[in-house]
Each structure stands twice: as structure tokens, then as C-alpha cells.
Amino acid sequence: MFHQSTLFLLVLFLLGYIGKNQSIMIAVYVLIGIQLFKMDDKLFPYLQDKGIGLGVTIITIAVLVPIATGEIGFHDLLQSVKSYYAWIALGAGVFVALIAKNGLTLLADDPHITTALVMGTILAVVFFQGVAVGPLIGAGIAYMVMKAVDFFIT
Image (tube, rainbow, N blue to C red):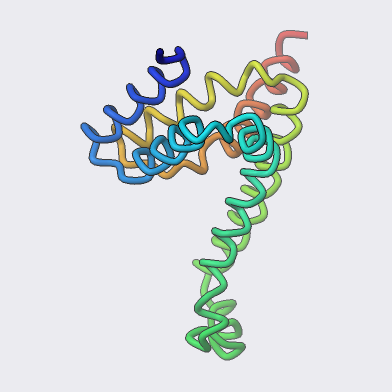
């Protein structure tokens, strides 16, 4: 018989199908496959613990490929710092990395927040073609807003 978690995953798969979001469908397909092959007891804790780090590593590899292929070199780096767009991008990169750091803190201190963050990410991925990097950044933004609210309330 289906567990509630499997039914939930199937609903998410259906939402991914309706929203034409291949990433969510593949993710659900992999998770159900892990359940069917009864590897969930070993793989789910590992994926939950290390998955974000692995995902960030894969994204970082993809971003660095143009450097590895020689498509982007030192000349391009030097040219880019002459543009104010590059300085804006640099600042945004620093800002997002700091937000994500606070997101990790929030998820470690208040794991129940994860449910709302995951649902928000799923909604954005399925209905708005968002990218599922949202839980970590979302947690960071939530952390900042929570601290601001605490500051003004107390």
C-alpha cells in the first residue's frame, strides 16, 4: 500500500507534469525509485544531510565550465571589472552567499521551517518555472526578516 509520503510525491509529480517542470518530475521519480528499491533508509538521510552541499557543488562545477574550457580567461575577468554591471554582480554574489549562510543557521535551529520553505519552493518551481535553489536562499531571507521583526517587536 502507498505511504502518505509516496502519495504526496505523486501529487508533486502531477503538479510538475501540469507545470511542465522536468526538474521536479525527475526529482520525484528518483525519490520514488529509491523507495521502491528499499534504499530509502540509507539514502534519504544521506541526501537530506549532504544533498544541498552536493547540489551547490554541481552548480558550481557548471558555472566554472567556461573557465575550464578556456571560454573565459583572465582577460575577460579584467575586462569585466571595468563594467558597473560586474560590480553589481559581485556584490549580489557576496550578498546571496551571506544570506544562504544564515539560511543554513535557520534550518539547523528551526527544522520545522523547512516544510514551509519546501512548499514555497515547490510552488515556485511548478507554477512559475522557478529553480529549486530556493530553500536555502528562502531560509536566509526568512532569517533576515525574522530578525528584523524581532528587532522591531522587542
